[in-house]
Amino acid sequence: MPRTTAPGLHFAAAAFLAGLALLSACGGSEQRAAPVSVSRVIAERDIVDGFPALTSAVTVRFSRSLSLPDDEIPLASGFEIRIPDPFDEGAEPERVFIAEATISDTDRREVVLKVDRLVPDGSQLVVAARLVGGDADATARIAGNVSGIQAVLASRALAPLDPAILESGDFAGPDAADRDPDAMRDALERHLLERQSSAELREAALLRYDEMPADVVTSPKLRAALAALTGTFAEPAIDDLLTAENCTGLPVARIAFEEPPEAPDLFARVTHDESGARIVSVSPRIEGEPLELLIPLLAHEATHCDTDGSINEEIVATAFDTLLYIQLLTVFPELARHGSPLSKDFNVDAIAMINSGRSLPESLGVLKSPGVSAAIPNTNARADSFAQFIAQAYAGQPETSDPEELPTLYAAIIGSAAGIEPRNAFDLVYLDAIIGVAVDPGVVLLAIATLGLQPVD
Image (cartoon, rainbow, N blue to C red; front, top):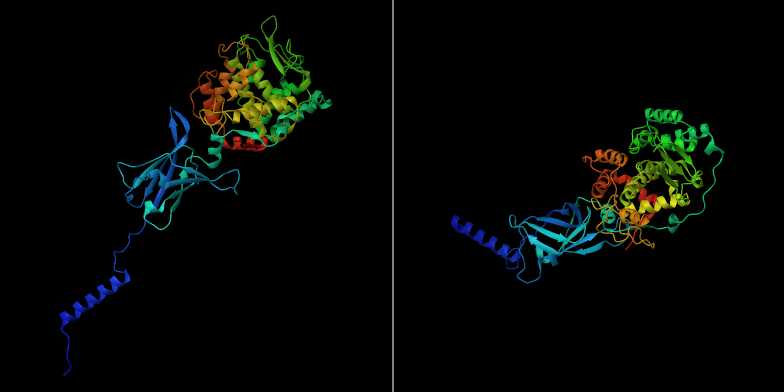
């Protein structure tokens, strides 16, 4: 009769053999824990004194608490951020090190990194292997609240790749069409169509052109330029000039191509006749300029109503004509390379506005951007902002004057798109905010591309 094994002995032997197999598989040591993984990484731009800064807080969440090595190496040294260059996809990402790293007091799975840079969406976080307990560094994509392009625009000045954009030749003289009422009406209609204006807006602008008194606005080209303000933020300039609804209580006496009194080098100037009505004198040198370059010029001159001028008033007026020029550039890019002194001046002012902005550095503005020291880099201009650049051109005038009604109305129209309550347009902090916030980012990018701008060191 064969021998049998007792059931209890059979199960005990099986368990013993299984244990031996496990020990053999583990080499006789404890099983190693899986590395800590990165669950998410979020970068947020810092706000300092109510304004966007050029620094970031990056919150890193791990799958479980970090087991920090028993050494004195700073925690920050275990992290690195790599930021791609949005202007050069083939370039190596920039390596950015961490200023400070802190484990959250409320959740040991979170580490907050302080970075002395704007960290854009799509950057990469690298965590040292020694922190995650693996054989290799851990990497993760960073979700940020600014794009790569925005981070560059906020942090660095832009300059034209082709310096010819800042050069100019002579003015071309007017041709027969510039003085032909029918030809200029057709030019106005083509302009409006290019802007994709609605049929109602085109009809309103053409009606304004037809009804504009030729004995007051003596050139059909100037009538077309003034009527073309219809549908822009500067549309109120039309009634401000042509009716008594302005600070003088009188319609404009004359808008004409004539030498600006006592200032032949100016492109345009506002003076007053004996009754107090305004006269807008536009230099005959620019009669042959494209219609689109005369439009922002008239928007500017209309803001000058009373007889008191100041540096601040010129900053504001020039800010509005530059903004309108930048908007027109997105539809008429050929303006940037027209090559006349007038187009060159608009290009220079546009670059200064693109390189300015305290309220939103990656947009347009008039005040100093925190990342920019030269508003017009690679030139001999010594201005750190649009406002400073314009102020230098009007040195010698009074610093401030009483606010004008029309620029404040322009500002209210622009600000309404951004939900900003109307204020005095001569308040440059307010002006900087409405221009920066209200302008569509696409407009800024198109202007940068049209002017051929690239970041400079």
